[in-house]
Length: 275
Image (cartoon, rainbow, N blue to C red; front, side):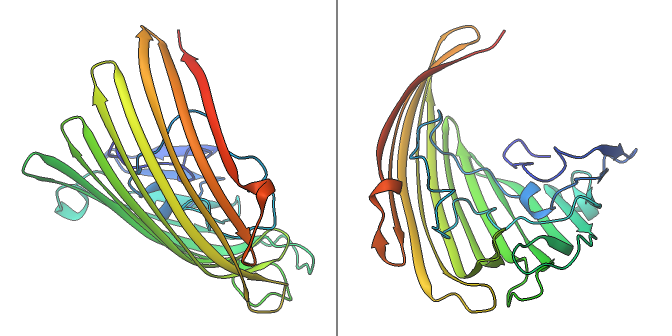
């Protein structure tokens, strides 16, 4: 796996991973989705600054390009070896899961799901470019919903030139939330950059997303939006000690109306110590 590709949700939670002699792997049990394991990691601010309450609110706008990742725990993810099918820089993944958690009308869980993702890494001049993406399709256990549990796509790219990294990501689709809320017309764009200068790393990121939500059994009609801008400075104070100063500004709106309780600005000052 390329160092610029995220493996979140791919096989990190798997209960069993088989590695074959050619370098390919097969993750079993809680294996996640292949698509989320193939995207390029767009730079963003570090630290834990943020505005609480957005994720748990009624706002249906995506918070990440992987927002629609859904699968049952009984499944697999196959990840190819590097330079798959003789193509230098190509890695791909295929996953599937089969579940039957029982039909319901008040909640939503993934039934049969499948996902495909790929990462391609190439060098152009002094830059290393990584492009990754895929899609996820998952059926819904709810008997009253219109949407599938997930019908989403995601794609991202990064370019590394010396100490500078630039990235962009995009995701779109529809899904059903855990509480059976229908989500339609969802889209999210992310941009980020980071620069390393000696012991200091400067990072900035932004996100702009929207989605229409509605009750189970109806198309989403009410538009929710979520926007954020953040930045951070990391400084390696000593071996194993990194100090971080970060800032973020979030603007959230439910059904076109700004929600002050889920919007605002925040600072973060902290340190990461490892030994």
